[in-house]
Amino acid sequence: MFFLFGLGTRQTLLGPGETRTCPRCHNTTQWSRMQEARQLTVFFIPVARWKRRRFEACGICGSTVEA
Image (cartoon, rainbow, N blue to C red; front, side, top):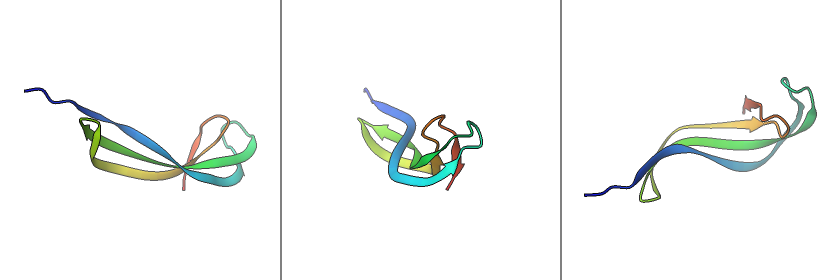
């Protein structure tokens, strides 16, 4: 019997976020609003998702801030 499954993290772009100054790279830019979730897939179909979180990410260095 052969099962094909996977475990990973999925990030989804929700749209533009606020314009702010990054605490890491000190650039002022518009951040991206993102959602991230851990998921289990069976035969490339998502079966379960957990640890969902929403955050904003800097477009230059990738630093994140919880939304």
